[in-house]
Length: 96
Image 1 (cartoon, rainbow, N blue to C red):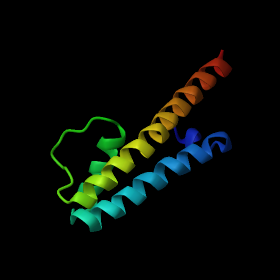
Image 2 (image 1 turned 180 degrees about the horizontal axis):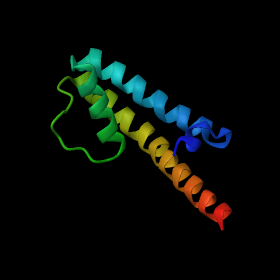
Image 3 (image 1 turned 60 degrees about the vertical axis):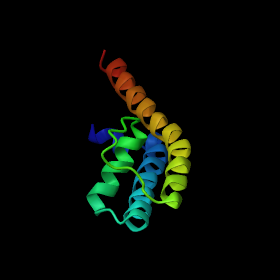
Image 4 (image 1 turned 120 degrees about the vertical axis):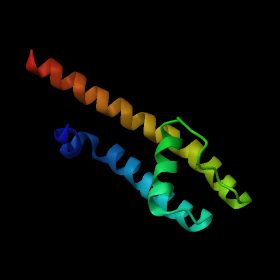
């Protein structure tokens, strides 16, 4: 698994995913007044399209940011998941 994170082929999508998570965490921490972990948790479950509903933005600006975050983030997150599965598939193919 660690090899995936150091493979140059996947650095851009890994960087984009983690940048999005960090940026979202910072924004929601200050905008909604959530604890750091709660803001990070919200960002992860939002990008993973789980959406438990235990954390939801209360402010209008927070809701607008969440909509932008969802539309920009889901594609990046799905590309990250696809890249990881491509890495696994390639690794299995090379072992044969």
